[in-house]
Image (tube, rainbow, N blue to C red; front, side):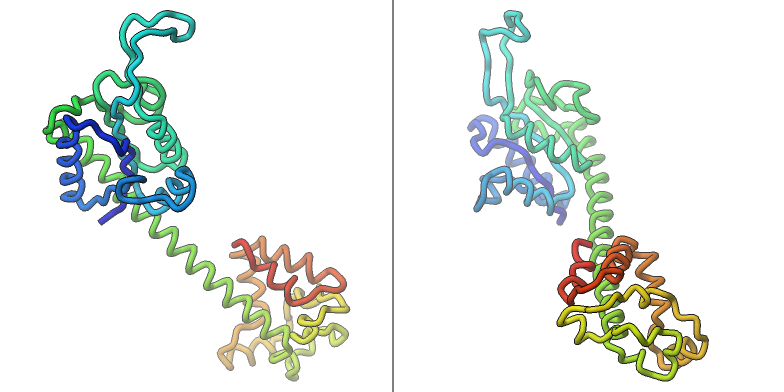
Length: 282
């Protein structure tokens, strides 16, 4: 079941409720789970904040433009109106704009005569379908069935892509944490106090204890790549990553982190907290 946002008013007129129930049944049959603030979800914060949070879990939006305001007399752009104007809820407009800005698959269906904003033809890159919401079978018509099917295909595609992006982000974070731990282990001199660390300048202190209490000397030398083949061979035999491997991975996969480390290690006096901050916000 894929979550979708159903943008609609909570107070649907009685003569239009059966058509809405039929739509819910159709969506459930299509394995789509409609969510609406004030109907399936109830706010703990401001409505707009709640809508944004719900949208983050959804993979598509279906907008139902029910008439909320009917204007019989007035001016539009300084001219008297000659026929009544039907307006949908302002929340339809807000919710549709949020979905559209995030490039979420959007399907717009409105009652006949609804206009302005997203309900104007050509206002957004999606077709606006007009129906008679008082007809209980409006969602069973061939044009609407076809529109929902095509929209669902885009929803499924969007949902798959979103899952892949989340997976990549999680894997990327795990990899970065692993590299950070490798780097800390090397800085603690677990490896660099061996006979194979001759290429490392002995005048620099790489101890974790120094990182904890605040470094008093620059660590920029640490970011120089090891060139001693004996050290590299020994590390590979032991199954441990070499310093070169860790630095190369950081530089290639996380250039922002690497740049922060370069800046930090080139500075006098920093501590473990400064080091940890280089790996944040990734």
